[in-house]
Structures are given as C-alpha cells and as structure tokens.
View 1 (tube, rainbow, N blue to C red):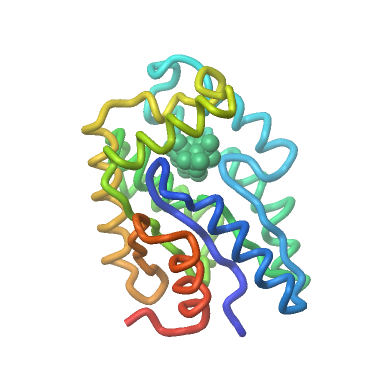
View 2: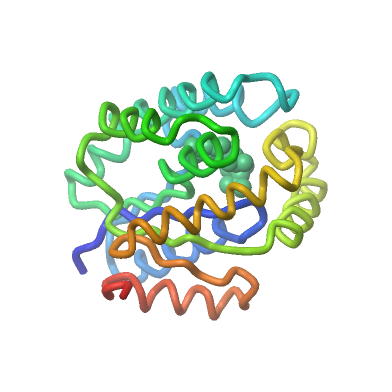
Length: 213
Ligand code: TYD
C-alpha cells in the first residue's frame, strides 16, 4: 500500500478518534510501523498550544488568532513528528489536520479561505494527506454524542470550548467539510457516521488504497 499519511476529519461526536485508533490497530496487525497522532497537538510544543485553544470562554480568541494558533501548533507537529516519521516510511494516522482549520476557522468562523490556503502553503508546502476520511453526521446528533462523552470523562469544562459554539456554527462547518470533500475528490472519502463502528471501520479499510471515485 502506498498511501501512508491518513487524516480523519469531521464535526463533533462523529466517532473519528475511535476510527483512527481502529485503523492504527489494524495496520499494526498487518505488520506496519504506525504513529497515531492528533491535532491540535501531537507534539510537546503543540500540546501546550492545544490547551490554550480547546479550553476557556467561547470568545477567548478572535477567529484570526485561533487560525494562527492552529497553524503554530501544526507547524511544530509537522516539523517534529509528522514529516520525520513519513520520511522514515512510517504510517501517520492523524485525528484532525488542516481541513479542520478550513472548516472550523474558515467556514465556521469566517476567516478568509485564501488566507488559510496560504498558511497551509507556508507551513506544509505541497504535501497533502494521501487519504482523508470525512466522518459526516447531522450536528444535532453529533453534539449530543459529544456532550455525553465530555460529561462522562469530566472534561466538559476543560475541553468543551468548540462544542459550546451554537448549532449554526456546527451546521456551517459540516457544510464546509462536505465542500472540502467535493473539491478534493481524489483525497477525501465522506463516510456516514451514523453507521455501526464495525461497518465504518470496514469501509475505511476498503478505501485505503482505492480510488475514491
Ligand atoms: P478535540 O477534543 O480533539 O475534539 P474532537 O474529539 O472533536 O476532535 O478538540 C479539538 C477541537 O479543535 C475540535 O473542536 C475542533 C477544533 N479544531 C479547530 O477548530 N481547528 C483545527 O485546525 C483543528 C485541528 C481543530
């Protein structure tokens, strides 16, 4: 298999972190070297920036500050983890990546999409994920799932900043992800996140190497 940089994207409560983990386990069982990581965060420096981003009041950061901080974290993660691991031939499975900045800060919070594309060019360059799975769900269902999970883990106060944004915001970012997938049909696969865990996993495995269209 040639596709080694795999990203998972989607709104809140889509089960994408679970699917990222299932895929990593599957690849390890197949004998591959795999790194499972996440954004914002994934490297020590980026995890410090993550804490500033996911907690606190909704209006803590302006959209533009938020976008720059996401990219500050991404630059560190890219330089110190993703790029060196890919260079070694390791599979890198990333729970969220740049499409999240486009959807959340761009479509969701109104940051200029071209500006975000420029940031991508400057920080990452021409490299794109080899495959991106966009887990799609109606945000009313997704948010419900997400709040249940945050409450169960006791993280509803410490990590719930984006979940607390209004439903309109979550609808905009869902549309944003679908638009991104439409514009990148060779890279992105949209998956119905209401299906069972096992069914979604099978679909993801079947689409690892396949052409999306
Ligand atoms: P996380 O707890 O990882 O949420 P989830 O389980 O939904 O992935 O928190 C990350 C939050 O950061 C999530 O709400 C999406 C948001 N985010 C952005 O707004 N822009 C970005 O570029 C990234 C990577 C994440």
